[in-house]
Image 1 (tube, rainbow, N blue to C red):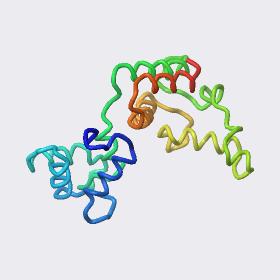
Image 2 (cartoon, rainbow, N blue to C red):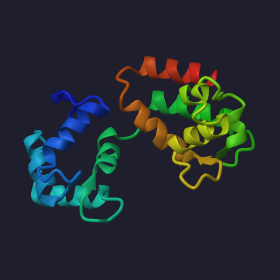
Image 3 (cartoon, helix red, strand yellow):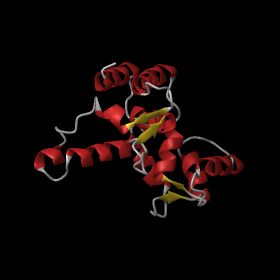
Image 4 (cartoon, one colour):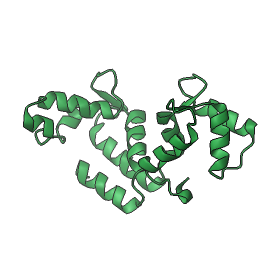
Length: 175
């Protein structure tokens, strides 16, 4: 996909919309087969069916855009994973495998958030929104290693250069 210009989330979105013939924001087995082969993957129907079953995490028989992004972005390389791990370990002082909201709140200030400045939301609301980005959907105030890695895998997919990604992580978390 990258060799065909789909290097960013926006580029992958264009590919996904091209594959999604029905326009329902989901790709069924036939769309998946045709779309991947049109992108140059040259896979058999059985191979694309296996891929679809693997990446169809909600088991509805389709791949939605979020599932597609996870599939395409892959795992972090060793350089990126090392800095992501370093940031997580900075906050997981007790080694529990979870970072709490209180741990992150020490370094993450919400007072410069545009909606906080305008008075639309409070700093606490902005912070909860920030936590939700890590996958803290149940608002328990805890981010697991898996949630942290998933978040940074998504961030990483839109940054082509390892050095730039490392610099962003280092600056963001004061590593």
